[in-house]
Length: 322
Ligand code: DP6
Image 1 (cartoon, rainbow, N blue to C red):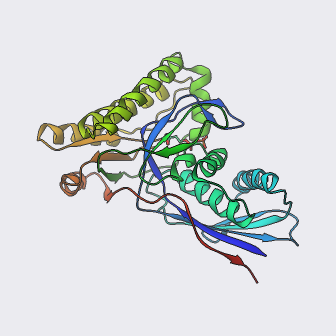
Image 2 (image 1 turned 180 degrees about the vertical axis):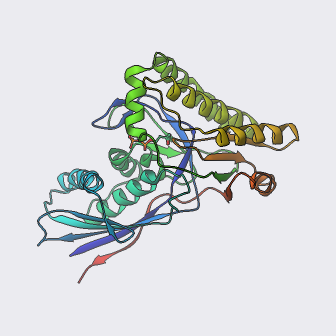
C-alpha cells in the first residue's frame, strides 16, 4: 500500500478572500494576499488501500463527521481522476491548531491533504498545480501551499493559483479571545453576502485595487502601507458581512476593543495593524522589533502568540505501508 505524509501551516490573509465566482471550482471573485505562518501545522497521512470500499478520514484520532469525510473524499476524487487510479484511501490528520486559537483549520488541512494525496497517488505536481489542487478543497488552502507571503490570483481554473511574493519581514501576534462556536461557516456566510448584500459588488471591485496596492507595498518593502491596507480591508470585510440579510457578525465587543488598543499602540509609535477572519479573534500584523512589546500589551485581552513566516506544504515521508 502506497502512503505519503505531508505537513502544512495555516495562513492569515492581509487582503481577504470573501466571495466566489465559481463555487464548484472554488474560483475567487477577487485575488487575495496572505502570510503562511510558522506555527500550528497540520500533518496528514494518506494511505492507499486496494481492499477498501470507501475512503476513511480521522482528525486527531477521531473519525471525521460525514460532511468532513465527504469533503476529503471529493478532493481525493480529483487526484484519482488525474492519476487514473481508483483505489480508496485512509486519511489521518493531526492538527496542532488549538481548538480555541480561532485560526481557520481548513487552509492547513486541505493543503496538507493535497500534498499527501498527490504524492500517494503518484502525481508529480509543481507548486502551481499543487496550489490549484488545494484550492479545490478550500479556497484559502491554495495559499498555504506557498511559504511566507503569497498572492492567490483570481481567474479561471488554470490561472487561479497562489505564488510567493517578496515583501517586508513581518510578524503576527495572534490574540485569542474567549470564543463560542462560529455562528455561520465562512463558506455559507460568503454565499449569503453574495446573494443579499447591496455592497457585494463594491467589495469585489475595491478588493481588486486594494490587492494591487498591497502588492506595490510589498514590492517597495513598505510595512506601514501594507499594514494600513491590512486593517482597512479587514474592516471592510466585516462591514460587508454585517450588511448581509440576515446579518452575520463575527466580531465581538472584545474584538473591537483589541482593534482600538492596536490603534492606541500606533499612537504611541508602535508599528501594528489589526485584522480578523471569520471569527472574533484578532491577529495583529507587526514588525520583528515591535512584536514582543505588542504581544505584552495585548496580553490582558486573551492569550497572545507571536508567529512569523512559515514553510509551505511539503511531503515529509513517503513509502510503502505494510
Ligand atoms: C475569512 O477558504 O475557508 O479566512 O473556499 O469556502 O473553503 P472556502 O472558504 P475559506 O474562507 C476563508 C475566508 C477568510 C479570508 C481569507 O482567508 O482570505
